[in-house]
Image (tube, rainbow, N blue to C red; front, side, top):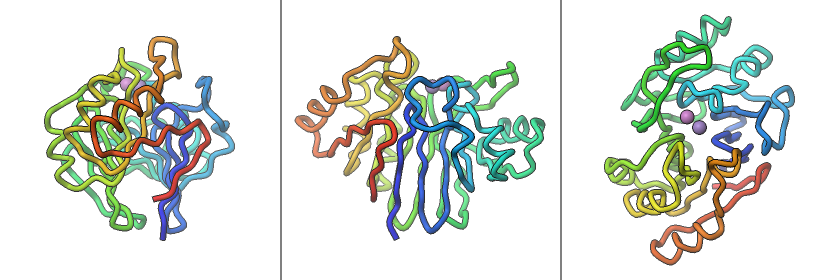
Length: 227
Ligand code: NI
Ligand code: MN
């Protein structure tokens, strides 16, 4: 079985594997780069990395319509249930869980996590997936941190890293992240959605490929890749 990842822009991916669909940080409505409407997405699971509006996005409406199980930290899980969602699985930093499609562990992320209504959203997280023997690290929103080296020790097949700057790592620190993680492949995200995070992903790709052994895949919103 292969793993298919489709980028819906920003931090949102649809991951298809073993006949199941997972959706990360579904910010679609109000996102100028989103290639799909929230009401057209089908999924079995929704993962929320932190409470900010450009990550919680349309999670509640999609979960209500599809019955998808929401995976998040404990604090966001409580908020999700308070919004009327029945299926929500809480995890927390450092903890992994085996789902029917594979495993996800929540990693640290240096960022904020207040929810759109001001509720406390706990600690922001990244996702370390183990699916079909492949390791995918989706850093979500974070600054650079040296413990990315520990994540890299797990042997990362694909790293998904923000390069937008301003709210997260910019191109310079994302390049340093690649050097710490040493992934086989890397996809840049969280850029060009808003003016303050405009970046040239191709220029970044050239730098990464000249200074590391990682292969950079620059995706356009709606593009897919297979692992
Ligand atoms: Ni954020
Ligand atoms: Mn964000």
